[in-house]
Image (cartoon, rainbow, N blue to C red; front, side, top):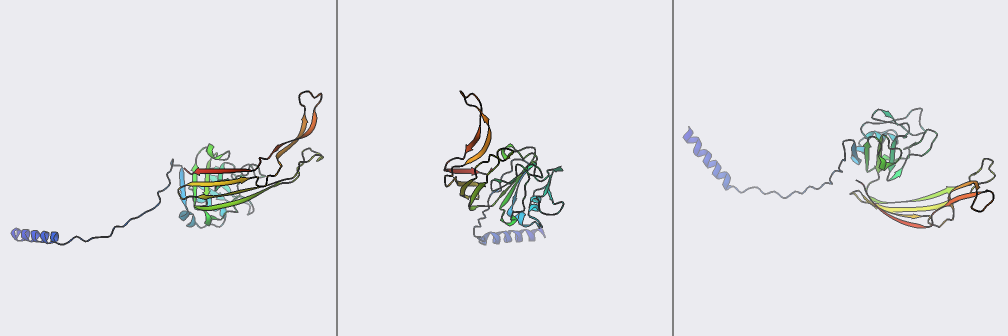
Length: 250
């Protein structure tokens, strides 16, 4: 039996070597490299992950970040209540939130400092969210005590115009002295590349308004004056300026 099987195996091996090998066309697969994570507490949430989440209110998109809860108590009409790693962050007091580089936390509000209302947000336009969990991210400002959430609108062109208007403001308690009303226009435009690089051009105080950033009224005395003089003091706005910024998201 062994003498019969062995020659048959040799014959099959010879026939296999004689047949030409099947050729296949080269297939090239390309995909963007995932963004690096600096630590275990950082994560990048893609547009696909965001789109796959059912939400009833815009603020609930924050729950795409693991460990972050966005609740809504006492009905609608105000910002969500945020919780991260078991900590109550109120309406954003300890959670820094930015969208395309614009901080969303309000410095002062009746509900507390850092109030962040996300009801204007259109979740379908988010290209990605970057989450950092941990104690105090100094690079993200005063409200990043427990974590930071950074939203991105994705690659492409962007532009916006800002009209800054302040009416007359009382400078003393009896309203006898008021500041002058001010108005200014700023323009911004740029391009966001898919590798995290953003080029931005800002035109500040486009029409050269001669106004003040802030006004005070108090008693002051210069050298050589016998008594103080009550008067208005102000800090003028900067003249027309063009600013070019190149930033890289790490």
